[in-house]
Image (cartoon, rainbow, N blue to C red; front, side):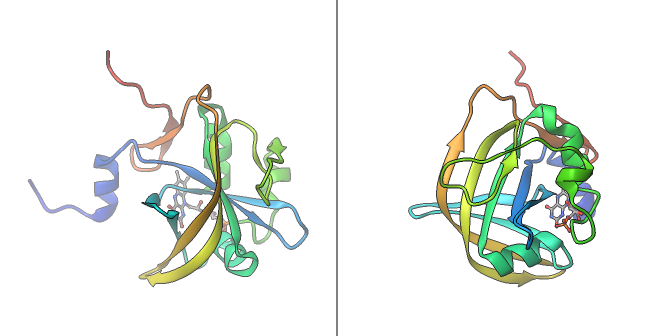
Length: 168
Ligand SMILES: Cc1cc2nc3c(=O)[nH]c(=O)nc-3n(C[C@H](O)[C@H](O)[C@H](O)COP(=O)(O)O)c2cc1C
């Protein structure tokens, strides 16, 4: 083995998980941002967490509104994943710019992209400073899933979005 950077490590752990962090904008619309650093934390009670750069608009919105929905993208959302991961919502309405088809779901306070296979609707419990990111620790209110949609993952670190298949 050799000493490598943590960024290089993220290539070795590919495919990495993906979520679209959906937060409430002040105008009532949804801001969508791509996040790979999310994790389950607890099943009793149900809790998840995600880490976002301190500068992210999504972080600002979840700290303000206290609610967030994590929408796990299907493979057909690959372009949405890359678009929403390369542009901040601070200055632009990404849903409009990228023409994202949204859907309202029961018990979920923000609209989420159509083509998601899993939606985890949360309330922010607390956030913790972790270097150049904040870790957002959330209580889960609702979980909605669709087993027919094929899950997308980030490959080569975060450079390519595609499904994962298991060799038979
Ligand atoms: C595949 C992929 C994964 C990403 N994962 C993260 C992540 O885990 N945490 C993070 O802060 N930013 C991540 N980003 C970058 C953010 O999505 C990007 O900074 C985005 O502009 C933030 O949008 P916002 O300012 O509207 O919140 C990722 C981008 C891509 C393309």
